[in-house]
Image (cartoon, rainbow over all chains, first blue to last red; front, side):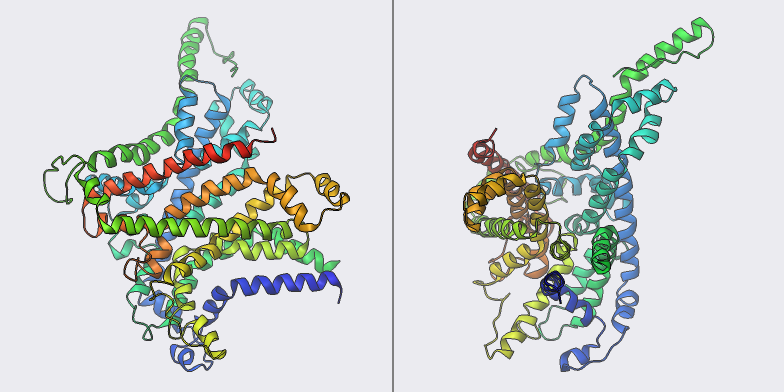
Length: 268
Length: 312
């Protein structure tokens, strides 16, 4: 065995050890409660059937996809338009408006919790998808990041398109967006993951069980069952795995250069 | 920005009015582009700050029709309550322990994983995974890891012949468990940022240092640490803000208990605002948290700002 191969195996072992609590929880989710408590092996899919069927996790999964998906699309659209304006125009008040966007990065979000709850209650949007989505859409970080990226794109590209009679929106859509695609995609991923994992706002904004996201559903399932010793850990872990899995799969897809690296090493 | 007016329009007069309209539209373009984002930021970020300040001077239970003005009464109640000082202390301990722990561990690990080798990339991927994983799920999984009965850690203790420990029911231990779990989750993010910072350091500096006969730790202390100072500053700002806003992991694992031993400021804010519906006191607490974090940001900029820019 070569030294390189051993180092790789060592790194893999260290990584697995680091992730072992989560990996073991996934393994546990395929066991019956009885087998878990008696230390025997008895594989089953019942925990998934129960969490999806009896505890509504199919519904929570759909809610999470709807909310995170719409927040990502709307958030990206707004951030990209604003970033385009801040990168390409010098306009009166522009610097002040940009400062107002960047300052949101320093503002602790919890100061908005009670007021946003009151605002949405007043317009009757608590316990709706809109109530979950609207306060999460504006993303100062994405606007700031994309503005920096767009500034790096040669202006000659815009100007060529304007020569051909394009409107600003056409330039944005046909010139800037295709060139800035990598930055827009990584911001989209960032927004999607943060919204997927968002907990405190759905906790505040929703009490109707049909609107629970996965995070709220998982926390409630776990808390319903707080008695030490009587807790059905394999069932809880099936729900937890359902909550983790979509992001995990996405991460593995995006980190394909990691996989490519592994296969390249294998070929060498 | 130079825009080329449309030259292909028909007769002269139509062209002139068309051009005038286009002129207006051209001026308005950047404003129209930033309008949606700024409208949302104004409604859901800036307006709420003003609302919080206003509500913090009033007494309101969310239901009654009037909200009498009570001056600084809510602040006085908070600042004389045991709960507030307890939460502030717990949150401060959490921040003071977990922030240095995260940064030191992350820099040490990052300096080993900075090279673009296969093992380094595998380990980076594994370490980064918790940072993108649901905090609620991590809280649930680690509640099992540290459960008194049937938990992973106590199971291992049993194998070694050690007694069971009540990790999350012991006021002396629960906070340390939370610090450990939070560090486990956030470490990968800090490492990735540090690696980006380290990769920007020119390799010749290391070569020069090792030619000088510098030992590994010496090089690390004299070359690496000063050169990644801007990265450290960035991570410090981010992780202190993070630490003072910690909520989810606590809500899932301990709900602030036992006996308030892990009752962070945001957990208190949630309880006061959304289970007691004491909107005035909740808002006062939110305003205090806001002032605290802004002050910290300013102080850090003063103290560390000089060190960050010493080389330029």
